[in-house]
Length: 491
Image (cartoon, rainbow, N blue to C red):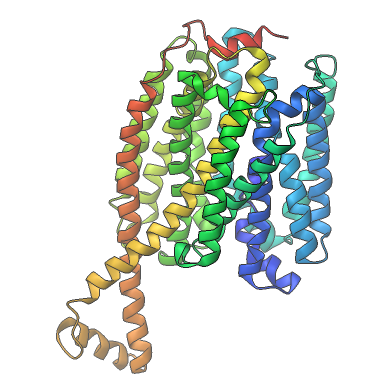
């Protein structure tokens, strides 16, 4: 429900903007506001757990998420909708790492891997399902229902969680509030997220606004880093990066997730804009990714404690590279069957991707630091996903412009195939301007397809290079070891 909300509104922006009487560009603040607030609150999870207790914090976050979702659906204007989305993002942040923490604290050693495998699958499948579900709801009901559907699910989740966990809350400590660290976190994360979300629209560093946001993010991050590493009660436990497994595991997971998320966004854009797919059919073309993920997840969960997680992560990266190489061969003649083949195979990589890397990065972390580690790794992963989306879409446009220039170089007005094509189009009833526009559309289709192929190809090579990062970690204890085991025995 939480991860779905980060992407479900994407395809509903035109409908929301039209209903509220604003432009689609202004409507994108519905997405931006949630992302900024979510990114700020995720790394606060560890500190909030110490103040409130993991179970109480999780239940309150779910209930407040239900309330803010309901308010989003009732928002009478864009200003109110953005305000409610900010509140929704703030309370949503701790939910993902806390759900991970509570699962790890609930299962014996042998079953922690299976539980986390099922948990991790939602994080990877939801970004694919979100646009499909959002598009269907917007087309067939109305856009407020993309928020209302959270209400019954959230109330059920809160009730079940409180019923199961209310007597197993974590100890509470009255630690002082790191107001300076919290303020710096809000400043630099907010500036970075705004820069990533608005960069493409404002032509990146050609815009003074983006330059200012970049400088604020850079300086704010530098000061935040120094403050948090020297403060006695930091709001974010950056000392976790001193652990080899946490540092390299988080880096490998985050870069891989950024690549995955960037390509998840790029595929439906290419299919809808240049291959004639509707929002629903593009979603259906990507939906089979969950088939192998669902079938193989129980196997991965059972075996992650016996097999070397580094080998499992290596296998996942190899399969991701294969999938992206297959996609780099796409042309404007590629049919649905050839789009579906790599999508099916990608499900195998997803099953072997999240849990082994999570096991590696959490291994050896004491139970009391697990919420902080889960929150911090989730924050880095979410930020990498935002960066992956911005980089992929920006490079796609840039490479398309380059390919367009190359494709038009040999075309000379009134000569060769170009002249024959224009003549045949005009003979079919098009005006000279319409004929030129049609030719330009065909060239753009080729250019954007080649640009997408370039990004798929580069992404495949980066996935191969990530194998080295996975092998820079130490193997956890074969029993399933690490943080998962410690947390499992903690409650």
